[in-house]
Amino acid sequence: MRKSTQLFMVLLVFFLLAGCIPQEEKRPRRYTLYWPDPPAAPSLVYKGIYRGEAGIASTAIGVIAGRIEIRKPYGIAASVKGDLFVTDQFHKAVFKFDRAKKKTSTFGQGILRSPMGIAVRGERVYVADASLKEVLIFRDGRLSRRFGTGILRRPSGLAIDMSGRVYVASTFGHSIEVFSAEGEHLFGFGEKGVEEGMFFLPTDIDISGRKVYVVDSGNRRIEVFTLEGKFMKVFGRGLIPQDLLGRPKGIAIDSDGNLYVTDALKNRFYVFDRTGKLVCRVGRKGRGRARFQVPGDVFVDRDDYVYVADQVNGRIQVFRHLKAD
Image (tube, rainbow, N blue to C red; front, side, top):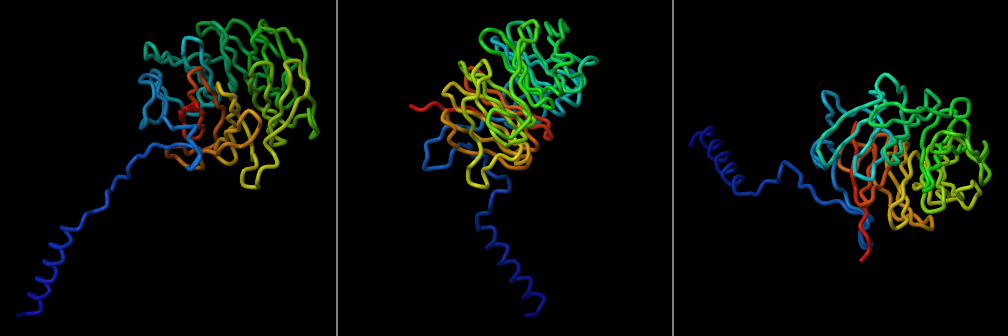
């Protein structure tokens, strides 16, 4: 038998046998993601990437509103009706997602310059604009009032308490400024420094009951105050080195009192329990599921869905808090 014939027979047998060997799937399986890792009981589950016109979708990237899509989302809020609002610094606008009607729209173009934090109370949408150094109030997509001029210095996050008072993080002012619902300046608290009760570049606020939680970004910690601005406690530092907050940005609180804090430097978010103990950390740099590139704000709605603004990836990633049995 010629060598060429022998080589042909060897190759033929090889390919025939290879056809009997199970091949690894080319497309990876999409397992459900839970946190924290076993053996701890899961308290958080990944739900997908948010799309305004279709609710939550696990594969869509970006959100379409007319002919534009989210490019650099930062602030997130929701109305009592369930409408979702997202500030977009690229488009200098606010995206409104009417989930009941499955419609999307935008407003604020031509007015906003650098929209960041956002909060909703009734028909009013409050937007902190870092460049304008003001908070702007919109109703039905139209500007109705603005306030904070001469007081706020690069305002970023904001929150509203049960009485309607508006708490604004004046980032370059290193303080929290408090206004009435109509925009009258009531008082402020905090000053630049590293001691407890002081701030260095605060970026976000959330309110739970009678407690005000402030992201003290420059000092890499979370500080807690009363509604009147009296210091209570601090946490977020003193963890093991790899879990130290790098550049915390946003904060939100779920119905069980757990705190969610985004970290723009480490491209993740942390979950702390109501005592300040670390429960888990979620994410790393990337474009896949539960991967982030410079996360901004985080928001928790009434159903304990957790929305995270994934800025550079141009999307809102969605998780859900699982209540213990």
